[in-house]
Image (cartoon, rainbow, N blue to C red; front, side, top):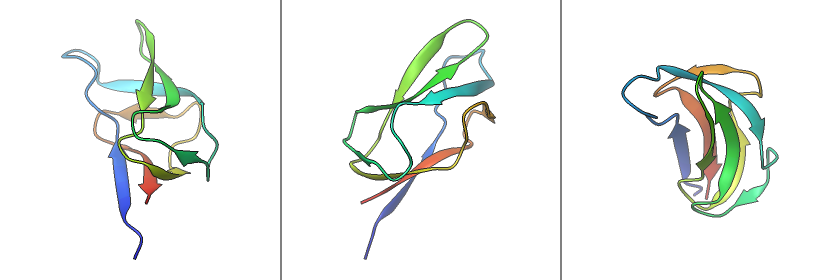
Length: 79
């Protein structure tokens, strides 16, 4: 049976409430390694990369340009 890990947008700092998905570094359906950078997000002040929390196949849930609030689903990683 496949294990699915839902990756939620993590808290960035004490002030940021939402970020924009700038672009995905890995394509939907790609194999990703744990701690591998998978997307870049933008806040009002800076841009940074988010890393995969598990190894497996990436299923993108938030398209580029989407605004996400902290804790909302970003992607799934299927092991």
